[in-house]
Length: 293
Image (cartoon, rainbow, N blue to C red; front, side):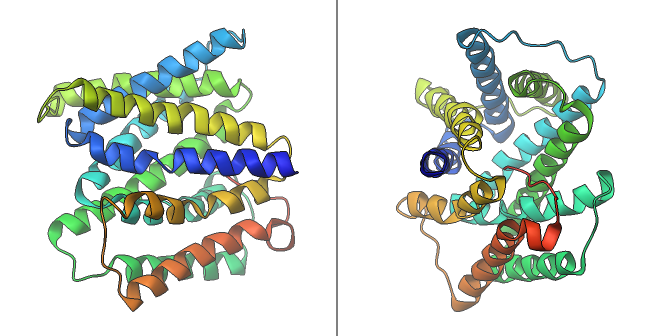
């Protein structure tokens, strides 16, 4: 139990660096370019990890892997777009909406039971979100909020599709194809819409994306999966639900935001609803499986 908690806390501390690093990378790359390099690096890490553990990358025949790669690609682009408009702190808090979207998708796609408490917690999370982000926002802020919620939904959809369609394959194989196909789709988007531009194409920017992919797409997930062997899934996700606070601690020194009482109440409502979803899976949700994010 203690080992699992330590591993998951380390995973949280490492993965929470990514929003800040990705924000800095946008000083060198346009969002779609950053998303492309991020997915390429992540797929390389998966391939190398397979070589190290001597686990061959399986060929995934299921056609849904293409849809999974597509949703992940668009989600990754939206993530970098949201960071181009908002601070990492705001994006980190909005990212907790992932669990709410996961519940809704589990009901719609996995035919899981929808209980009254689900509605109450979802409504609470929505109210908390609006209170947290409402500051008389300008157009750019609204765009950032929309992209943040969209990337959160698309990542939840990606993981739901993985569970429903290709969960029989090894995790590393799924991650490899997910990132590799995302790279292909993002490259196509760049060819169609443009976006392969840089404000200053330096090795520093590439190194930042390399670090981000390593922390969030490889090492952080590896520690998370290893930690799951020693603690309950609900306990692991309870630890992860505090992620926005860690992101805020990392980011505040570089991207401070002014919080009002209204914003603080919104943050409490949003995090509180997510934590309640996480800590009472047996009493409230029966055997519903939690989704990691």
